[in-house]
Length: 524
Ligand SMILES: CCCC(=O)SCCNC(=O)CCNC(=O)[C@H](O)C(C)(C)COP(=O)(O)OP(=O)(O)OC[C@H]1O[C@@H](n2cnc3c(N)ncnc32)[C@H](O)[C@@H]1OP(=O)(O)O
Image (cartoon, rainbow, N blue to C red; front, side, top):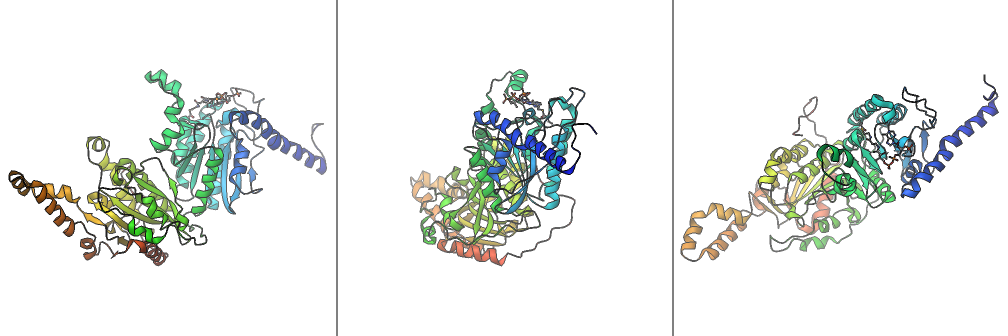
């Protein structure tokens, strides 16, 4: 034994304490000195902001990287650029990892990769959510192919854990190259305005390969990933806001796919039920805010929106009805009249599949004039990509309750939680217009000859108005669908919360089996 090595028990304990000081408080002090001037928290501070006080148990704080043929490893430090462990959030267990940008730029090498995989495996076996806080320069250059291997391994773990435990990524700095695929494979990604960047190749590479000059913010900032690409589910104003959002999100979710979401005390909605009787305007061409409907249906009117600024023509988010989590998919007539387009379809499909995987009942509100027509959407693949939502609803076996508030035209009717896609309870307001298309378009198509004759006689406007009124009275009502049982009940809007909550209670123990298969072949 070397002279400076501890021999007795008390010396060994002292030695442990010294090592711990070096691995944790001393490392944090150095990290804070680098991160704070940039307006960023350290890896452990971020964990402390996320989890319950004193609940974090670190795993692998004494990990050291192995020397490589490239260097001697003299600069090695404990932890190897990532802090891993488990903790509780609101008393419920989570596993987490948090990149330490101040150690080798938070880049992933072998020891780092092993730590992350270990915690992922632990979460999957223990059945608890995983939160990954990303702030990294990507693959560690000194460790070459080994670091690439760990990215691939991590993608495999993400895929294995998908649908088993909720996976949440928080991007709080750079996230480039292969590193972006872990957030992409997780269920939710949170970015921080102006400090997060996520791109496959950064501006320098873009410039050298394509000659294009583009800033990092424009290429992969939080704003662009939140509203254009849809990679970010929430854009936080700062790091504290990002971690608050994750805490709120976790409170809606079950620990794993075998568990049910946590139950909370029942809260009354934020708006009176009677307000729903006046939400839908008399004119079918006038919009209204679907959030007003949700305010009178959900507990406390609370909706935790995901993808709020991406495809805002459909709202997706978590709320509660009588203390139980529901996944809300709702047309938003305020934005593009709530029409279904590619982004809206993919956004809602992903959300529906998440809810189905994690036993979260689906509550759909439809006011949708159909699928968006036109060259741009057709050429970008609205057929294949629009089919994703049909697929997701059809595949979902959780309780599904749908309310048609106004328009449910054409493919929009079918896709927004219709009975034919397996919804359990379908309700409609008396203002519902369930038809192949709106009255104006239908009359132009059906009465071409009559309208031409009326035109010749100088009475086109009055004939057209009469035909539209007739079509509305006979075709665009909820009663044609109700007669056939496609709608279970036409209800007074003010009764919506009561009827939705009764339906969800009735469906609480719903069990629906799907035929055995290896996996589906959904249109990706
Ligand atoms: C399958 C996976 C494939 C991939 O991940 S390929 C992508 C590989 N990564 C990259 O190309 C990004 C390389 N890094 C960068 O571009 C920049 O460091 C980055 C992330 C934009 C951050 O820039 P700054 O905030 O200015 O910080 P900085 O450059 O001074 O870096 C801070 C310290 O971190 C180090 N670092 C950053 N990325 C690293 C990496 N990948 N491997 C090893 N060390 C890395 C960097 O050398 C610097 O160290 P030091 O403080 O000078 O000792």
